[in-house]
Length: 435
Ligand SMILES: *Cc1c(COP(=O)(O)O)cnc(C)c1O
Image 1 (cartoon, rainbow, N blue to C red):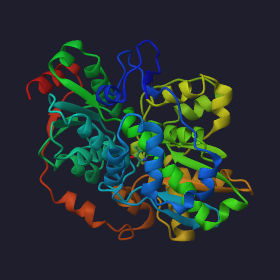
Image 2 (cartoon, helix red, strand yellow):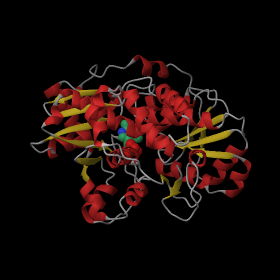
Image 3 (spheres, rainbow, N blue to C red):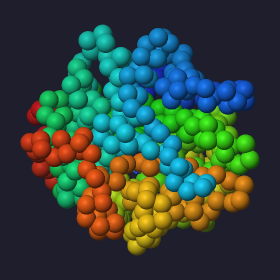
């Protein structure tokens, strides 16, 4: 399978090149040249397959021409050493829990898949590859842990100083080995800008092999489709799909997760409606309403992994639907919530059902609660474990009501090792070149 750039001014590339480059030479995002469909019969018996088996079938559609099936199966099964279960919250709202991986957030799926795929492509002792990743919280930890100890790869995690939680920070600043943490005196958008500038810096790219592990990388982005298929299969087991149509609500920041869901639907997954649930960073919400797209600086919220003012993957959504606002606003319904609304939702769901939504999942839940019709059943993506946001959560549901999983407690005990940098590109470049 070949990959083209959303900016359409560079030639098609192979999967290997798309994964190593991350971003196309014209600064566009890579897209697979075609999207393979499953026959409808696949969905009649999909519930007989395990999550890992379903994921392998999906992976074959994306990567089957480029990776030998036995190897691909190994990569998929090794990536998914944890489950993504579907949990019933109310009569017709279900939570797709994506937080059972090593860093307790959905990004573990894509990051672990990408690390294994990159390692497969680098088998033949090539030059060291440097992974640059900008994070607003969870990407950094998922990527760092996904790549930790993988030979031939060095990871630089750039994060905005003082803007990620202590727990999030500990997950990429305490690892050591091939992981370097860079604290940037700026915002997430500044971090992302540094990474993007590095990729288009000719001189730097002649000296070093650079790649991105942000959600723009096809090896991170496409595997996120796996769990949408699994949600459908597990929901079928509950028996609700016989009489109701599926609505999936995705808490969105950079829009990689939602775009993977849209791909799943293009592959035939029977989803009647997708919802993009935003916090106050509502540039896509505004676009869906008005047709005007005005990216700007990000705003800080309590759902900080969605604090993105210029979502990268929006370019893929535009490309997928031929830049048609009419089509896009039919395919995606938009909702946006303030910090107060998010807190209110966390509290209400907890009091009424006993279920703890994290601040991101709460946006997804609330959109379903407001929007579901009589003949619809909703699944929202629970994108991170609530304990990753202990301070925010405890302020809402009370101290002691947000248990800390052992995996997270272990990170907090590690020794912190950080390099502090300003937000200028020159300083960043010098640092990387001196490593
Ligand atoms: C990254 C992240 C999001 C946003 O996902 P995108 O793919 O960037 O839209 C939502 N919730 C959590 C917890 C995240 O870490």
